[in-house]
Image (cartoon, rainbow, N blue to C red; front, side):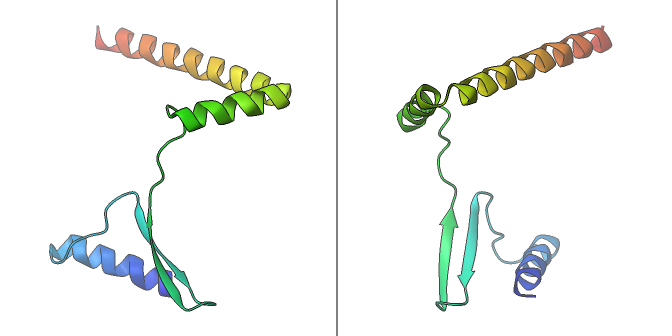
Length: 93
């Protein structure tokens, strides 16, 4: 019920134009056991950071199956992106 109330408050803010709506990438965590409220913020992506590259390298080195799975997923993504681009180019002409 607490989450529904918070979500409803955000909807009312957007509809009425009053107050400051919560920004994307931020949130509030209610820890009822410890009676604390924590403001959350989005963590930076590990995709392009040095830390992310190191973690990928370490994981791929220790677990080759993860590397194969990652490479096949990236190949599937690039194939689907090419197909989408080709369909969009065909439709636009």
